[in-house]
Amino acid sequence: MSPWIKRWEEEAGYRDFLRMAVPLIISTSAWTIQHFIDRVFLTWHSDEEVAASMAAGILYWVFGAFLCGTAGYVNTFVAQYYGANRPNRVGPAIWQGAYFSIITSLIAIPLFFLAPFFFKLFGHEETVMEHEIVYFQILCHLLIFNTTGATFSTFFTGRGDTMTVMWVNIAGTLVNIVFDWIMIFGNLGCPEMGIAGAGWATLFGGGITTLLFAGLMLRKTHREQYATLSGWRFDWELYKRLLRFGLPSGVQQGLDVFSWALFILLIGRIGTSELAITSIAFNINMLAFVPMFGCGITVSTLVGQYLGKDDPDLAAKATWSGTHITLAYMTFFAVIYLLIPNVFMEPFAMGSDPAEFEVLRPTGIVLLRFMSFYCLFDAMNIIFAGALRGAGDTRFVLFITVGLGWLLMVIPIFIFCTIFGAGLYTAWSFATLFMIVLSFCFLARFRGGKWREMRVIEPELQPHMPVLVDSTPTETP
Image (cartoon, rainbow, N blue to C red; front, side, top):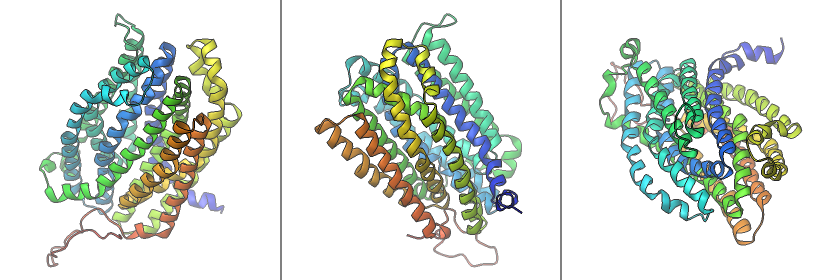
């Protein structure tokens, strides 16, 4: 029997991975399509607005990634409790994440008022800056939906019920797209709102998604089996455990996005056209990159479930199965980025000024060539970082991502592009170097195997055993 066929049929093989990953890939693809259409509509409406949406959106996500990365780490708790056959602990874990989400989302209030200060720091053109402020302030209202939605969704992803996640996210995406069309262009009697309309449409879609996750989680069968309602009480010990493992994950994701936000904002200092084409290139890359998050969540969940069962060998096997499939997926995109880049450029060209867009097109094609090279390394980053998070190795992921991000990308781009006047391609070269080095660091950590002994959940005390004073989880420093 072919080893590929054998691995398809085995536990933790390709079939097990794809059964969980495909709905998540579709789910994250829906989110990608939502943002892609946002940017396409804004490109048709105004080049300044699409440039502003990228800069403001990524700055918002600096804070959103921190909060959602922490709250969403409940997924690992759910996966390990589920793997350990302790369903009564799933509901309490979800509620601790919900309390974190509600409390910390209040940061949106000062962020709203600080928006003008933030964007004046970066020296963008006045028109672009005005659009950035409007879009960012609207997104501040979205923060509570993003964080609580991320928490409630882990009830489904952590148990492997990814079909529910897929349908809920598709529903939220459809709501967003419909309101985009209505509010950006002023259809069906709505005033033409431009970038503000895109922001409000995103808010409506996020709100619907969160409410659907909450309602489905509180169904009777889930309340009875997983204590999704009776587990609402605040549990200080479990909450501290969430902060212990989840905060490094959230800080890592927030600071990683901050590095990329600085990348975008520094390019904005080079010029508005460079910022616009970088925004377009990033949105094209989202078609390939964001669905990989589904693969990363799948690997993290499978690793968590198998470690909950105390079977690190199957956890490792599931990770390598995910690696093979994700690399094959990204190879496909690398080839088409390289061979037919204009296919991806045309949606942005359709509704924009032909003369203006043709100036941007050659640069955009070069940026797609950059993406065709680095996307394979990006796949490795997502898979191996996901595996480490699924075990609880969040501190390593934090330190290596942030350290390399500043050392290899942010500081060199600031020096060469801002001080010495280097151009757009220099900035993209440093970003590519960062992703390559990071991928090999994650690979080395995974192969080192320290994650095999890590757990985020507390040991289950047996009735016939004495209670131990120290019940902290096993973790390798």
